[in-house]
Each structure stands twice: as structure tokens, then as C-alpha cells.
Image (tube, rainbow, N blue to C red; front, side, top):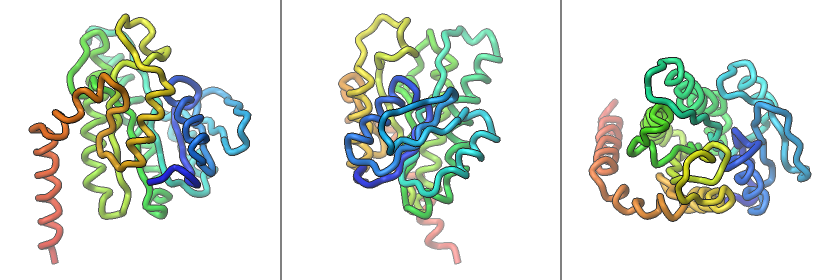
Length: 242
């Protein structure tokens, strides 16, 4: 998947990783970048088409779909991360609404276009999907669920020619992580790592030094081995079906 000449949609494109992904896609020669944001967005490059898109709003999702003529890559980047201790169910539900059902709803709505182009779905998750970070427990839960969604879609959409990628960054220097005092990678370098991974066809993309340090152990670990085995079993069953 080469970014040059492709049409890309990025949710949460107004700041942080999302804004950096828009700019990086343009640098790599994207033909059109749809920038989904909840607030109005302006961009100096004529190849950028702003979309009003709250990923929890079904009407806005449908309106956005009607404005997208074709699509090669969907990057589900919009997310929320709040500090919590799991004492308030509403906070968990808010994270699931944005971080799990948001990518699900946007992907389902745009799936006909992605099937037509044999394109790619890229879900921006977190290493917290692999091991929870207690100060943002609800966020960690939602990203773990979104990782399972990503793995499931990967198998189910393979027959349509749509690839599905999980991005698992470590801490990134954005507004979302400003209160956490740990080493962080820049949003720009992470955006570069994400699109590098998409162009390589990596199923899991570890776009920064911290996450990259666990990439090999993940790809050769028990969870990935089980995922491959389950996918092979499903493929074998489909082959035997009349």
C-alpha cells in the first residue's frame, strides 16, 4: 500500500497524531485527505477536505460518507482518554462509545468504498491495549476491546481484499498525555511510523521506540500465534464449505 496517489480519511484530525497524519500523508503524495473533526477545520493544502465528524454521531457519520467519493485508507484515530479509577460506569461507557464503537461505526459506514478499492483500515490504539495503565483504566479497557475488534475485522474482511492494521504506540507528546510525566515521542515521528507500517503491510504497527521495543515479542508471542491459528481454522472451514 503506497500512500502516493491514494485517498485517505483521518478521524480526530484537528490535533496531535491526527493532524500529524494529515500532514504526513500530504508529504507522501496523497491525492485527497479527508480530515474528520468535531470542530471546523481549515488547512492550507487544497487536497484536504474537512469533514464534520463526531464518531459517536450516526447522522454525522452518514453525512461524511455521502461526501466521500472514493477511499483507499481509513485511519480511525479519534479517541478520548480520561483519568479514572473505574468507580464511575459512565466514564467507562464514554470511552467505549468513542474508542470502540466509534471506529466500528465509521468502518462499517465506509466499508463499501474500502471494498471497492481493496483498501485498508488503520485503527490507532495504544500499548495500553496490551497491558492496562492504571491511571487511565477505562481508556485501557476500551483500547483492549478495540484491539480485539481490529483482529476480528482483519479476518472477516480479508475475503473482501481489505487489510486491517492495529497501531500500538507508546506515550506520545499530545494534549491527551500532557499530564503524564514520562518520556514521549513526537506526534510527527509517530505519524511517520504509522504510515511506514501501512506501506509495509504490517498487521501490528509499533511506530515509536518504546513500542518498537516490544514488537518482536508480540509478533512471536502466544497471543499472535493464537490469532494466526484461529484465522487459519476459519479459512480451512470456509474452504470445506460447499
